[in-house]
Length: 68
Image (cartoon, rainbow, N blue to C red):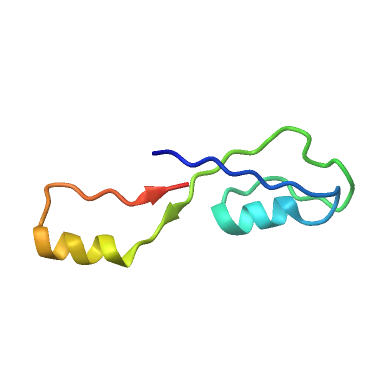
């Protein structure tokens, strides 16, 4: 199951900075309004300790963490 999320807000309030902090993508973050007109896309792995415990117990061939 895929999850899609967006960051919405007023111009020049730090949306690109937040995006860069979460995704480590390196999107342009400038100090003037409308610096990033085109949308940026990033993928973030969501760590889950439950998956780690299940992997230790069951020893599957492959384990896949969730991505957002």
